[in-house]
Image 1 (cartoon, rainbow, N blue to C red):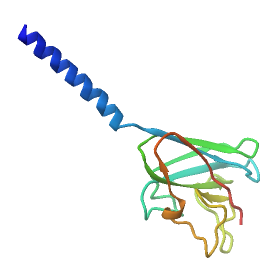
Image 2 (tube, rainbow, N blue to C red; image 1 turned 90 degrees about the vertical axis):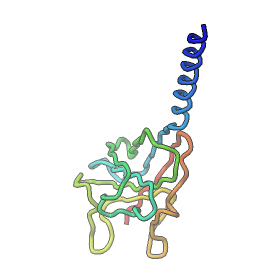
Image 3 (cartoon, rainbow, N blue to C red; image 1 turned 180 degrees about the horizontal axis):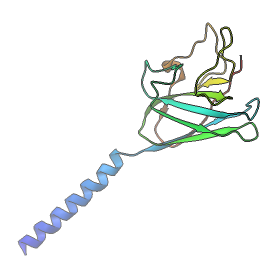
Image 4 (spheres, one colour; image 1 turned 135 degrees about the vertical axis):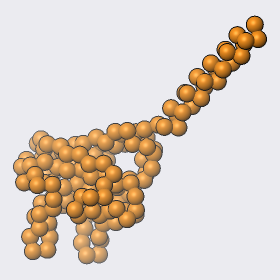
Length: 149
């Protein structure tokens, strides 16, 4: 009888710890939408960053996760899933020729770019992780404005 009670108690403790571990490892999704794209050429690339010092990342080498989406009716959407709670920033590129890099004219990008929390960019408003970041603590949808220069 004592053995059965000990086995039952062990099973209950194991189930409790197992369910608790799932609560610790909660993951969320982040949906990023870009509207007002100037055409439907190419794709929109979505880069997600989770550390200060990795953003902006002109050559796309320091991202946490990356994805791409086709453009339909001037809109592109991408969902990052399996994300732990934390601070994140997003960089988008309207990659019209699908070469996965920012094409430049003399100084400025030829293609559309955008950053979370930014409506415009310039010499006095350069993107950085601190200004672009937001807290993810549940499923979230954000809009990123595309900027053509």
